[in-house]
Length: 403
Image (cartoon, rainbow, N blue to C red; front, side, top):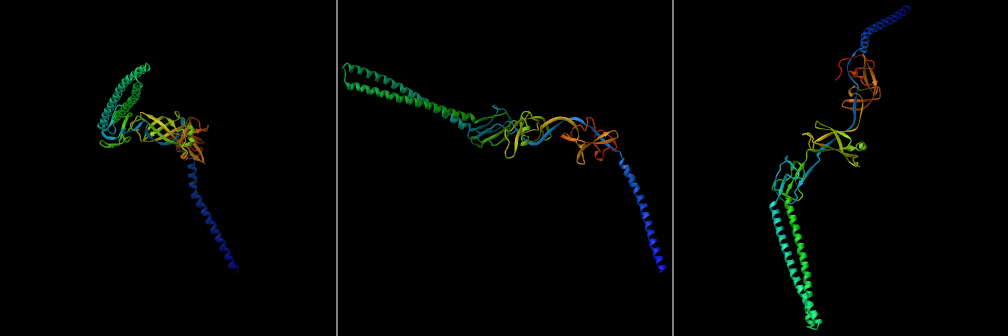
């Protein structure tokens, strides 16, 4: 029994010894393996980060609203036929330049209208002859009236002197009254003839105007943009034939949110246009709608563009930057700003290390961000490359100043 107990005790103690030796060996092995990474981590914390810097500087910052608009010609005209008829000739082609009141555009059925003028002139001449006849008849009847009046008055005196008969006096009195009535009728005929003359003159004026209107002149100066009818086609009165636009004076319109209505001042608010890469800076809002659209909650603005570049034409799309406010302020490159713990910060190079500075960002213009407050001073060396590898106090090596 004692021998078995001795062997059991010996087995237990041997197992414990082996376990202790294995644990000691593992600890030594782990210590040997971890020594190198610890040393490397220590070296990394002191590693110098190459950076580039840009000094903070005072710049003009703009609060802008970006929208799109369409360019249109300020002066445009759709030229229509003023009288109905066949288009005899179109004097211009698409792309031709025209001058207001000088360039003929097209001719409508001049032969028919010229004949209408001739007929109206003949009718006027007939009316004038009728008036002359009525006036001559009136003069004849006036002479008869004078003779009838003299006869009646003479026989009336003789009858009072008891010479002649009453029937003779009554006969002359009747002739006098008939002559007076004939005079009134002749006068009305003269008046009627006069009205007929005026009517014929008006008809001649209309015919002459139709003839004049059949040859249409350019109402505005500009260029022919479209031919809507061709020679030989029938044009109704008021039907469009040509479209003209003046490319020297353009207007761009856009819609802005109603919330900005009070901040737009007509004639003062500035804007910048970008038309397919062509910059048109220094524009002024020339029009602001007096009302806000109750459905869309927007209002219209317009900018007038005089003598635009060659590639800025009606129908083009324009990117519009409306300047709501402008001010000067200290700025840093926007790319230098990053979020650390949810706060915007920049790194400032001070000697051989970088200092993390929390900022209050403001407006952004052309890649620069306004820094409000006094956390960053003018001329401060802002890290613009390598900042994502930095922490507060990290050692740095300035490689090259950003241009």
